[in-house]
Length: 153
Image (cartoon, rainbow, N blue to C red; front, side):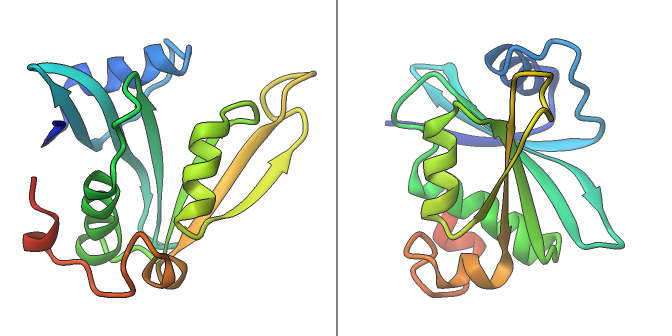
């Protein structure tokens, strides 16, 4: 079973940057929901680059386990982003070849855009945007308001 824990320590950022092969990535101020199995980090969802004027935030995901992120982790992050931060949209950027993350984004109601050359001359980037309304209508949210108690780790 995956245990969930919130934090903002360097181990979460290091885990995600290593998994994304982006060692120079700086998340600035962030919060991270980490998944642990046998006391070892197996995944992290980092919430970063909050734009208060646009009411948006970026989300980065990395995992070495097929069990993460699970529905509980996604709901916990969505509750944080949409209820506590009052964001109207979350943005997820990933490599065009990252089928797992792209599939997850689409399954929770995100709109996806492929931008050619955004990751270099021969590499496109997938940008997925999930609005609060799309999240609430997704099967992952269960068409209900997410509360802290229903998503607690």
